[in-house]
Image 1 (cartoon, rainbow, N blue to C red):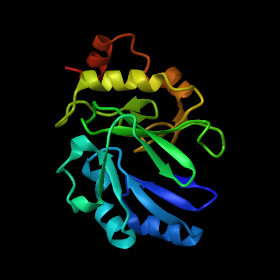
Image 2: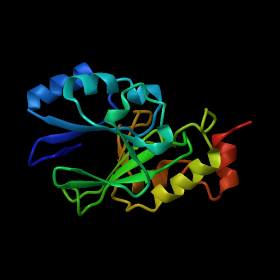
Image 3: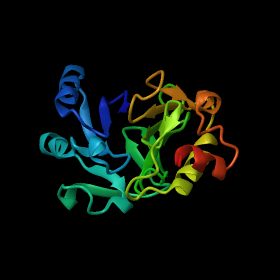
Amino acid sequence: MADEKLDEIAVIDPACVSHLEAEIRQSLLIPRMVLLTHSHFDHTEGVPEMIEKYGVPVYIHKNARGRLDVLETYIVEIEDGDKIKIGDVEILVMHTPGHIDDAVCYYISAEQDPNGVPKLFSGDTVFVEGCGRADLEYSNVKDLYESLQRIKALPDETEVYPGHDYGTRPFSNIGYEKKYNRFFKCDNFEEFKKMRLPS
């Protein structure tokens, strides 16, 4: 995610830092922060290297306290409703527990997006045509259902960028998910629970 005027970027859930570093050098970008959608290892493994190379702060939900193996001085604890600035762009923090209790999505409204198209960076809360598991440590299936209801209320044109490419395309939008995501189409919690936690 970048402020196009200043070439400042926020890196979300860094994994392969060598790949990121090549892109950063080639495009003359300036990393200003790391934004984590949650504390699972596959979303945080590149954090120590990002800190070592760029000295950037790391934003993560306050429920993740103690779950990252980095110096506390680099950690910025966030919670629902917080706003983060990268250049001229304001990012809204949406706490979306369920897959894990420290899960967040990052939302950029149409007014804040340089191209006028709202965006949601959803981590493992929403995938294209799917959603995260709810049977892991710190998971809660009811919380996940409620988080999806909240996300469904975003404008249909909101582009959704998940943490994994598990669907038929790498990203979509809320309108697409309402039509093709079986978890979005559940009429109630019991239906969702039966689908998400099959016996």
